[in-house]
Length: 293
View 1 (spheres, rainbow, N blue to C red):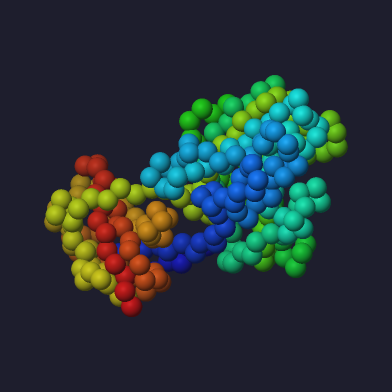
View 2 (cartoon, one colour):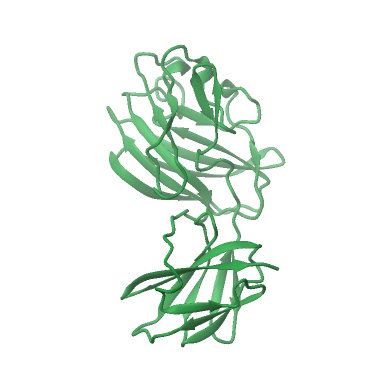
């Protein structure tokens, strides 16, 4: 959902974000000889020597966080759950009971986004599934699946179909086709799947900082309250966009530069440090500013 604010000298669109707890897989809990990402149930508790869900330092974007989640199938152990690379957020606290509402959501998510890498074997299908609930009943499902090998981190976005409202969500991630009765849902090979930075609606991106001295624009006042003024020292050949990111690298606003000076409404931004980015034919320039009310 976007809120559009029109100003005399330009505009900025703010995104309402519904967050996924531990969507970047930065927080992990150690239990005995294995680790689980906090807030997620995994088959690791049922395993004895092979743990299908592990923490990886291979993550993306590189400058955001330190870890991702790695899922690996083991057909030598299938169809037992020990061999399935599966994550399930589930309020039942029992991975064998099937999906159920797990964490609360606010707003009206329209898609689930994130990054993945996939090394399939024997035609395995990877899957990221988000299920929205209202009062315990499932109201919408978004699913991204693929059988194609992806060696480099790649973004994905899976839309939710139209629905009225939701109050909670559960997420399932698997490196195999986990639908249907046996033998449909068992892995066909020892496929490996990496997933990182899940989010609703907004694809999380990393932001590189440029010093204010090197930038061709100025922001004032800094700190700002409800308005910040953008002064541009040069004239661009074409219409140029600007983006605003919060301290976690999430896109929270965007607009077009119209003229050499314009005011940007920051009333909907909470207190904190933000980065304004300008993208043009000459390249990318960024500068930090503070919102303090």
